[in-house]
Structures are given as C-alpha cells and as structure tokens.
Image (cartoon, rainbow, N blue to C red; front, side):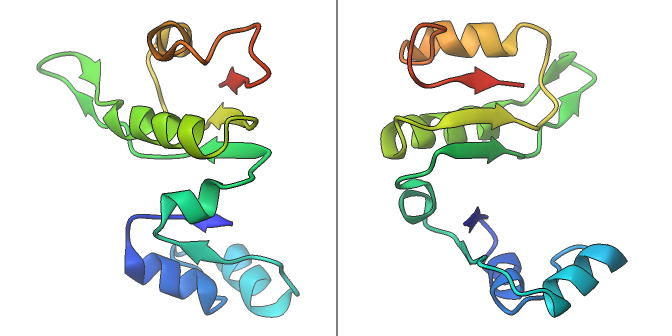
Length: 119
C-alpha cells in the first residue's frame, strides 16, 4: 500500500504508471503483476501494517541550519495511531539524533517497545 498527499500521484500508481521519471520503474509498474495500490487516506494505508517506510521531504533551511522534519513527525504520529505494531523505517534525510529524540518525545517509540523506529 502506498500513501501520498498528492491525488494525481496516487492515481498514476493505481493506473500502473510511475509518478516519477524513472524508466525502470515505469516498465516495472506497467508490465509486472503487482499487488499494489495507493491512497491519500493515512488510516487506510497504515491500518494493519507490519512495516512503514517513511520517505517524505525534509527541506534544509540554510538560515536556521535545520531540517524541516515536520512531515516525518506527522507520519510517525499517524503510524503510531493506526499501526501500533509496525516497524517504522525512516528513509528521509534527518539530522543526527532525530530518531532518539523522536523516541523520547513520542514515548511509545522506545527501544523496549514492540514497535521499532529505525533509520
């Protein structure tokens, strides 16, 4: 299951078309038999998930010298709510220490929890 905030990208994936310019991905989506669909509804996408790969933008602000990790944090919060058993994998660019801080700040994401947050 794929989740995106852009309905046009979701539609392309559901039509077996690549939402990005990548020849191999385009061929694979068009020619392979896939059990793949996408949605803009986080609860639908996350419910019952065993693993959530978080790949959202984290723009860097050179003035503040910080990454904007708000989209990553939003997905973590949604996953904690909708898929408490899932392992969360962060594929986005994040600053050093972000994972530890997220575990501490969100409470449920700690090393002794059955849920894991990895980068």
